[in-house]
View 1 (tube, rainbow, N blue to C red):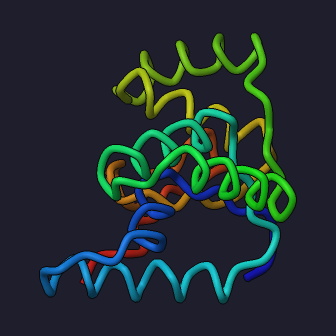
View 2: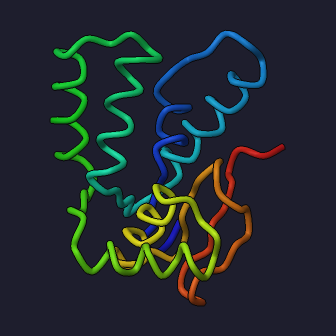
Length: 141
């Protein structure tokens, strides 16, 4: 895939955690395929934090696992620190697009990272934000 893409934590978690039911297994395979086919993946510190806490809570991974995961993640992908400008952008996005607080921060980070696509299962599939960013749910059947 061309251009910068931003991947929300829910997609990361589907790729990282193998589940038992068939719907989650389907999403696991789709998410893993997305990472194999994607170049220039961008994430934010918020996404790293969300992945980490969910690996500990949902996947029962210990701190050693999470330490290694974070080390590998920041060595492999571009991780953007959240800026004060993104906080203002996120507040505007909440007003104009009715996004949740946390989703607005993800969208603001994707825009600030100059991404054209944000992959997320939780946000409105097909939403165009400021004619710069499209939100796509790569896991829908």
